[in-house]
Image (tube, rainbow, N blue to C red; front, side, top):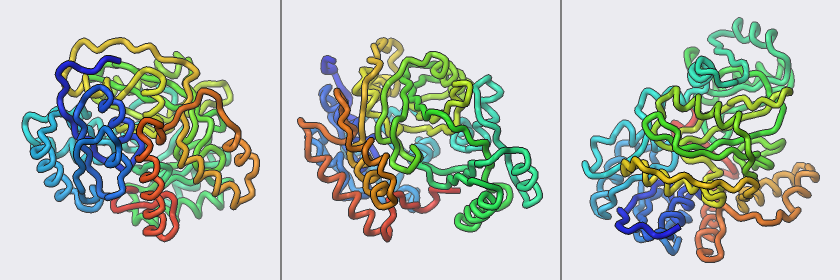
Length: 400
């Protein structure tokens, strides 16, 4: 792709994560000045050859008002004209756009649609009305209602808090007793009121599928569909670590139908599971960049570049040829999954991780820009120690 003739400088948040790093390397190679912000001094994107400046920021879950103040100051200081919120700080940016410099462009949904998409009960009801296939999902407000639902569904059961990310607040229960324990453990752990108690969802046992898409004021711009071959947790559970682009026009059409019904603006990450008939059912919407963002770049869609164009209000966005069969792997995530599988004796998963994949590229390693991989590893280790040994720590108001 040719460098842009008159690129506008950009500011990328959540710089410790590989999704933000994909934004940095994609836009940086096009000649865009990229500025990065993050709470961690070891944030991998800070050390990319394509990063111009780094701003130390507070944790947005814990100090949202201060986060927006620091963000506004950073945008003003760097003269960045396009903002890319790369995690749940999307919600803060939606609410606080008026506090940012008036000449900054950002492509995010409106707050009402964001809240529907992030709520694991509300989005199911909304997209099902639009004709998108979903698993049966039930809202529960009492112990009596829980028993009714457990009798309606066959085990295993999926129990989810209304809001969460990266598999936080999600439990799989093998039988009714385990489901009761998991349900009320979530209620107690996150101090949930009855109106915000977890949902109970039917278990769909098939292939895990992902969709990453971009929309402009409710109009589909581009998307990819991919099989999730491996994830960090056991049984392909949790954050994906290895994925392959597939040609699946039915799932793609259902994803477009769902997000157009939300009049979506900006990026979206969606998780699906295939049922016994091979139909992919939507199990999660994340209104932000997903862990497979590098796959869009590797396969030719290049979501960072297209998001940049949408944010700037470009009406003529070029069609992108997507290479089916493209592969992307998160090396560090696979390594963490391997260590967990070794510790728990899941040796078949170890063999999968250690088996080489031809023509596979990576979320977090680039020979032309190797430093971010080193700092990603250091940053994860620091956070692992700080969290008391958790590989997926919960912060602030992350699960609710």
